[in-house]
Image (cartoon, rainbow, N blue to C red; front, side, top):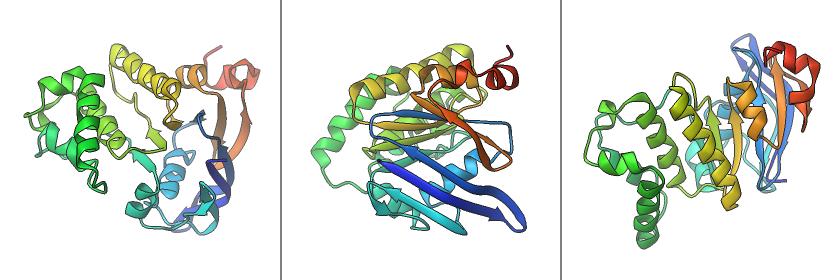
Length: 234
């Protein structure tokens, strides 16, 4: 198992945000996390990435314990998180943002090759290469933060609400990218997504979080009447 989270507990002061959560992600999978706002999905991703301290439980990535390690160390192990809200470095150019994604790498020829690959994957970024990131549209900024994360050559990419606030056409491109990453076989994806229908459509498996707890899990949740009623509008 690439990622194994066991009995994780995370709190903000006296408020328990994640309660005894256990999830697994196997190499090559797309695994979705769905649930209502405030269910603990984003907190779970931040805890895995080292951005939020955990109180109890364990997190193993490629059989190595990473709970409460520094975010930079977690990233060096091959795990990247794209936060909700398109966190570009707005005063830096598109090129500078992309190169920063590879700051922990030293294989300069490969970095240049990956940069060209990102610009081929996201043609609009090639057109905006010298433009400040803060002047891009919302969809362009989302493409940039995903491309920047991929510049670190992650083996596990965690995406937190990548379609939030985006037009349907851009949303479709983001989901096409996630499917392409799986097809290429180099990147495993853990996806938090408000659009449950889209997420369940592309995911191999999914977990449902409510009130900080896993209440459902499986490979065919789109067919579950409880999910259809609560999240799919059926």
